Each structure stands twice: as C-alpha cells, then as structure tokens.
Image (cartoon, rainbow, N blue to C red; front, side, top):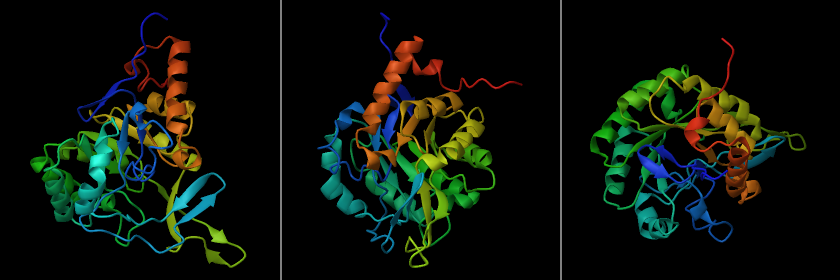
Length: 306
C-alpha cells in the first residue's frame, strides 16, 4: 500500500493523531505512567477525575478482581483542582499529547466552579464531565436528566474549552440522555462508565469492597458498552468515544464498527501499560491488511440485515 494510513480523528473539535485514548482513572495524573510507555504515541490522555475540593475517596478495600473484570469503589479520590493545577498540570502538558481533564461535582454549581478555575489554564484540550461515577454516596448524576441538562448548559455558556459528557448506561433511556447532552452543549460523548457489581469473600462472608457494591470494568462489560454505542450512534451528531473492556485491537474495531469515533482504554492498562500501544499497532496492521486508509471508512459501518 503506497498511500499512508491516516488514523487521525477529531473529537470535540480537537484533532487526535489516532483514536486510542487512555481512560480517566487509569493513567492517574500522567506522571505515574511515563516511565512505562511513550504516552505521546496515544491519541489523548484523560486525567483522573478532579473535584473542587480534595477527596480522600472511599475506605479500603477499594478494588476486587473478578473472573472477567475489575470492581472498584475509589470514590473520586483526588487532590482537588487547585493542587492539581499547582502540582500536576505542568507535567501533564509535557506529555506531548492532548490532555482531557475529567471533572466531577455534586451540584451544577460545583461543576461550574471547577470549570471557571480551569478556564484560566492554557493547554487543556477538552473537559470531560464525569456525570456517571457509581461510587459516590449520592446517586449517579446522569440519572437526573434535568441536572445533566443544567450542568452541561451552564458550563457550555462559560467554557471556551469543548465539553465531553461521560454517561452511564444505568439510566432509563441512554439515547434520550445522549441527545439531551448534545442539545445542552456537549461536543462529544464518552460511553460508558462502569456497571454496578459486587463480589463476596466466601471465607469471611463479607463483601470484597468496603462499600459492598462498586463499578465493574474490564472484558465482562464490553458487550454491554458496545450495545450502548451502537444504540446511540446515528441519534446524535457529535463524536462518540467508546469505552468498556477494550484490551485488543479487535475490541477497538468492534467499537468503531458500532459507531465510536475513538476508544478509551481503561482496565487493560492495569494488566499491561503497553496495551494502548499494542492496540494502536494492531489497528495499523488491520487497516493495512484490509487496505483501509482512513478512520471514516470504518466508523459506524456495522452491517445489520434489515
């Protein structure tokens, strides 16, 4: 093949050299991972979720492995937006890759306050609104569509940085919520967050997580997440970042065919930090073998008999 393969995509108006993104919470603040892989080869990195004030997160134990996935109940542990900017941001800027800052709050005003602070910072590619963390004491934000609309609308009015809405499948109608997020001002969607689950220690008869239930990620949720992307694709006019159990190039390709413009790799990073690079290499090989030159040739091309 003489023509060069172009894996670049545009997400929320941000040009990414390729569609492989490190998911929030799995690359920390970036500094934990730079000795292990060349982060600059990725399409983008999403930071650990930041809140207005520091949070210590949920009590331990906060992680439990299952047969085909990982349960977590981190509970948005983070250093808070001010310390993030003071101690983390400069190193993130040096990664040589677009950095998306993930934020969360309990009220629309808290989200707005974080965005106002981030607006003073140069170099943030986009802001991902974590509207779907299942491991907080209050209910998942995106179960309240009015609150989702309020948060996105308020932030869209003040933010010069594009907004990505990260949603959960744990809602009555994900398609409705996705359309609402777009109408409210989101420039891209991230689908989906973890699914609720639990694990029990049969020796102690106690739950393996301090909060009893947590968010399940990893291979177990891939078919569930894939369905979500496929159902939303074509109902919105903004890009979709697909995520959930992606650990191989074939996994990523399934999400592209279902309608995702990019993929976020999460739990697979804990198994092997090189997984995003391996996925990228696998995509290049697939495109080469199928003589596919551009991402547009594959996104949403799932063949379904009418």
